[in-house]
Image (cartoon, rainbow, N blue to C red; front, top):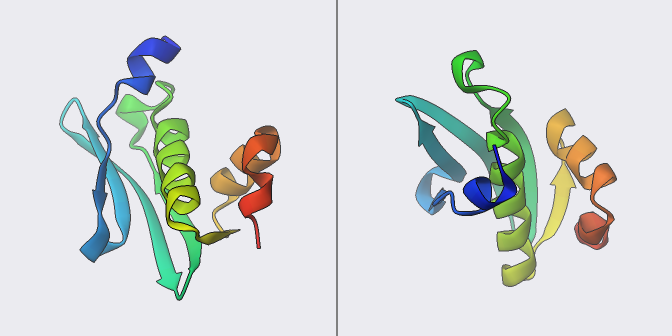
Length: 97
């Protein structure tokens, strides 16, 4: 998927459920988090196999990290995917608690 296509993905932030979501081909993709004060712990990234490999997980994590930055949250990347993403994208490492 091109970066233009993925960057146009309208990811939903479901604040009450503490998650970011995107539905691709009828499959729900999620990034779950908890929030304690101003610390967001990203706990799970889930993209069903039938829609894997399309950059969805990366887009979900980017949306979560951009929201954290905009709201002044610190981040705990407890999910291994989120931790690896932050490691590969140094522009987000300043958010890590």
